[in-house]
Length: 237
Image (tube, rainbow, N blue to C red; front, top):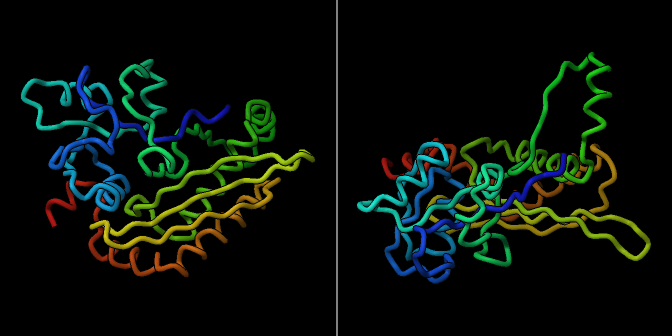
């Protein structure tokens, strides 16, 4: 199955302005429980505040829209809103060109687990597998696994495919690791011909090694020492 839009999105109160994260006034409160989003906001928009926001999408939207809400906006995954036919609540799609924020590893993709020895089920699943989505998410997951970051890693990624005149496809992967206070970062932009799962795995490893050479090792070591899992943990510490 093709991957649904993997980007993060800004959601503001219905009918409210401004419509872009770049235009939010200083002190505006952004709701999220994601360390990755919190770190990138600290890096790109240090004049904004982040407050922990939990619950399913309906609960989060209700908290945002409440008259006495302390929140000015939320950052959510586009895929969750689109799958629930709530695309009309999206104020701004966020990526490297709009808002500057990179999404989570595997965001928007659906994965299916099956028994390794069950060849019949594997043949069935192969018919609905979307190769480009599979390879892109495999590269992202390989990157995360090599960094050994887990859920506490403020790692953002963005993958895209390009095809040259001869029909050769190349996978481009942008990646960034940001310190919790937004003051340090390690980022990378690599492209590679990826034709198989093995190619994707290698690409992820190469990207991780590039980030580590650029200082991601120091950033991740400091984060692991604090062991945060949500934005609320950052507030408590």
